Length: 121
Image 1: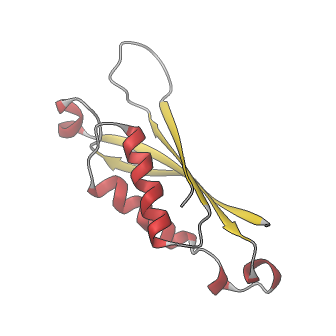
Image 2 (image 1 turned 90 degrees about the vertical axis):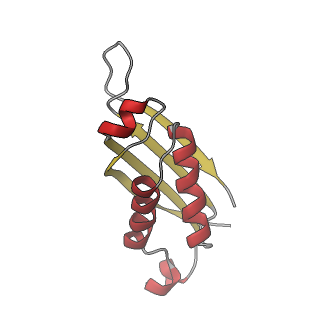
């Protein structure tokens, strides 16, 4: 079976995820990548918009999950995003979600912490 991948890269949101109480109070930016595998179909052969996944709607699902929930772990957040996307768009055969947290509360210098979760419905 052939597939194609739709990727939403570096979606940015302000949210309040984290294990520490200060993270809930202050909040911070989170960045999300979504790699969504879809079976090859009329979108490829007939240029049919109705046969594919509308990435604007996918962005809205990601935004809702990231900004309207609170998780202690970005692992759980990435999993929530994957589940929500697969529930909303049954055409997805695999959702790989990466969540980046740049302002981690650890005594060290780094760009960000990143977690990637794959879900196959």
